[in-house]
Length: 110
Length: 114
Image 1: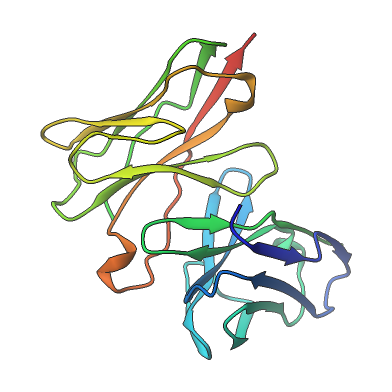
Image 2: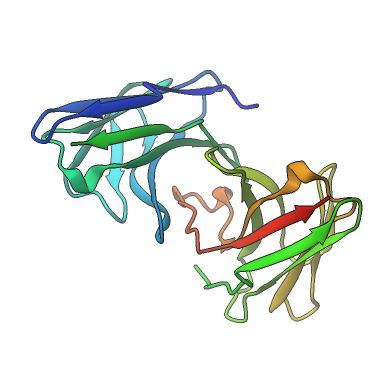
């Protein structure tokens, strides 16, 4: 498996609280992505990064911010979590042709 | 990226070949066909990709029609562990120079039966 981990793996939080999810890679890949997966919607792109400090928005970026200060880490922040952000979040990294996905973080916002 | 159409579900007997079809009639000349799968609760897993030639790796074979409007993923000897949702995705390769995200449709739920 590609060296990609996510933390935490599970989190329960309350509406209005800030939440940060971490994606860590050991592959030194340039591109990193955050997706969310909800029933009936498949995976949808939130934000992606094409290098340190270089990020851009995806399809469903409202309510999320990201940061990438090091090649190996890509952070996803929910500034003020809402119940609609309850989801499973997947991080991915990509080589020339493939994307490798992390194990996912299950986030519940009460 | 071109849109794909897959059957929502399929069954296959254990040990038999699983043939998963995908239609992508609007594919453009420089778009690749990718296949990923997602086993319940896990992250998607890359299986194979191709442009116009048939491809084979240790996991599967990919057959692309000559007009490139459809393709078939073949798992030659399906096992219970192959039960998953299989996604057919058409997109430019990463080498296109842009951070091309994957656009996942609904996929095909393959159930391998004992």
